[in-house]
Image (tube, rainbow, N blue to C red; front, side):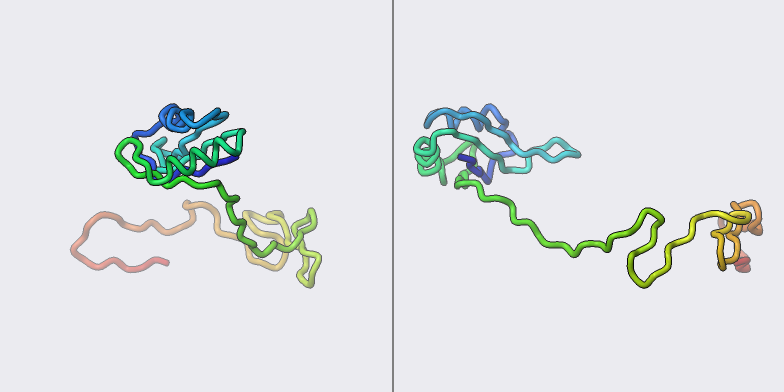
Length: 144
């Protein structure tokens, strides 16, 4: 049975969690969930116990019990609800929809252009007029 353990102290590690539940039966896995970027505990974890009677005894005994200075919230783990997101339309391998839109055109044709009906793009920064920088007393004219 999978067991959710909430309100863990940030100092609690996997072994401390395993030791708290091992007093009530066999523990196959104990894991404190950590932030991917910082590695810091998120304050909750999961414990796996193969025997359901032992798991229920551990839940009853450890719910609202104190571990590392914090009162635990212990219950049977529930599956995470999946939110339904709208699906994107299917596109063919050329980038077009199978709908009323024509397929997109690639970045071909012309100097930096898009191809087709669009005018060519401007090149890099070399063709732009030079703009002054820094702090000046006089106002600057826009060159754009």
